[in-house]
Length: 373
Image (cartoon, rainbow, N blue to C red; front, side):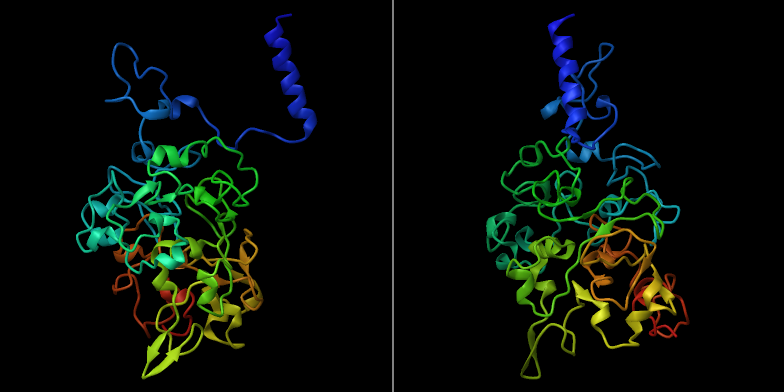
């Protein structure tokens, strides 16, 4: 028997007997992403070759229309995607879509290759930027950016931010070992957000349900120092804070007195705040219209995080660590059809965001359950 065949069999047996696997969970036809020579039937597969033999860059590979069971998550569309606040019937995924930023800068992050820089952001510096919170990782902790947001890299969201170039920074992640999302590498971090943990829905929340969705990591904060002192650096809200740190602050001065996080009056909407820490019987305990806080139905329209990420159709709002407010409880990470990347239209009668409008149980009122009565 050929020596190479023997070696191949031996390697396969070794992997089976070891009880572990070196293969990544990324699966599908290689040709979905790669072209060997960028040539087929006398014509180029792509207009120009791309690094790593890929058929496109980050934007090119992740542009398309999502369908159930697809191998590639599409984060932007060439035609208007179907969108709904809770994902019902939608062709957008958990992060939403960059589609609408083409005509409205307020609807998504302005990422290189998708949309030019937002003129309302001087020097491309993100609103709420706080270099102290970034840990000097994002943008090198510079006072002002000077460069536009990218998919990965020094000025990007995905990857370890150790290389300026997207491809170099994310290299190896797509085929890395992601059997445990523990944040120890980019491949083993939630959605390649380096250091962040969580549970990844297998189809990126394509039309999610109460029992089929992502599991987000949150942490109950009682002081603003927690998010900037490396105490909770593996939560989804901490990741948002690396660019928008000031939005996570509860400190400030009101009528000459200093106000801390968790103390009324609120100066900013809380993030990484546990609804179970509010007084018994508070409106937040009746999340998503429940009458039984211990078994509220999980909302894909206004998702909450857990101190230990899990996927369940119910949420115990009365138990600490089970219903934590995060940035993405209200926002889409990539974009939505609404201003400020919101999951629903905050300023519209059509989306029933009217205080006192009457038992809508949608948008803001999924948590603020008494405000629309």
